[in-house]
Image (cartoon, each protein chain N blue to C red):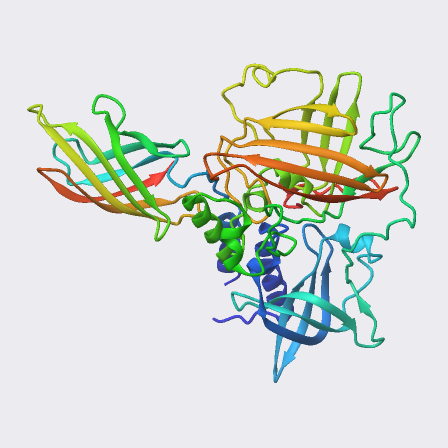
Length: 132
Length: 374
């Protein structure tokens, strides 16, 4: 019993002593990593790099070879809903427009996440990304 | 076989757990942890006085029917209590006390102690007055250097002193009435849109922080520096150290993580003033200043977004630029004015400010946040 209590105390202390570091500015600014599934064309892993210049949200999805510049983005503080649109190409070179709609969870924490749905002309699914 | 824990061991374990949880929360907004709608009166005997930063705790046994519970009573910091004349010997285990305060929001056996009265004597103890000392009947003149420039530190030959007792505990736009407590928590959340010309996202974030009773404040959670106007809003005060040979001013903090801000007075430009890290925004930004008559005007840019720049949690972005004006109106009063430009978070520039009082003959308090002693 004593060992169990000591264990519980240690875990409680460690949990409290592991402070996460938050970016305290615009809630979308930063890098977000996670998955959008099932995505057969661009893979299940997704990375978003978002910025805020004071007027608009800019950024890219999957920066790199499959770089998709965000062409339309919105954040609604009422409910912290997020809307993102970006164009990509499928393997045949046809334009695919991705539309992501989600909601920021744990806004106040360093480990905030965005969960929601995504779709393009050929596929759709759900996504979850976490702030780095 | 079941072994029963001795009562003393159980109390010690409970106290240990409580202590672990309270010390990790640091010197926080009181209402983040305690509910002012839950008044509580506890009558019992002291079991332990834990005299340590960031908050003193008095543990006491309280009988309820046939049961005895050990409560943790949270009080102000040792520095605040010692400056009010109290010490670790004010109370001893076994002393009977009556505590009035407010209970913890989580329902645990913790309370904030508004009043502690020794049962045997009726004497109120461990109370703190945060009101500034009375002003002299006739204002004392502003101390100056031989060239006539005002001194922001002690008078020539004077002993220590620092600035504290901010008249404005949080930023609120000039001309707006939006009362807050000492941590910047609005008395009325509906005042939030009036506080500053916030962009919609920034207003939403500010309201979110306020509704969470500022419990996510990175200055307390992560010892993040209080950059921007916040360094002049803290109860532990600030001290100006003027290096006239090297033409710079150091602003030392009495709390937080005990680091400092540098204001360069040598005429340098913003760009390139900090070698090699022009792309590395700072908690205190890059500050250059100049004297305009009796006022020190400081222009600061280059902030990062990893901290709250004011009590109360008004958001900012890396586009933040501050124009601060420091005027020592007389020996005991420092006027602080600030204009905030941040097109990333606000719809226009806006101004705020307040005054600080000179605390004479005392060293700047030394709270060390990294040791959870904010």
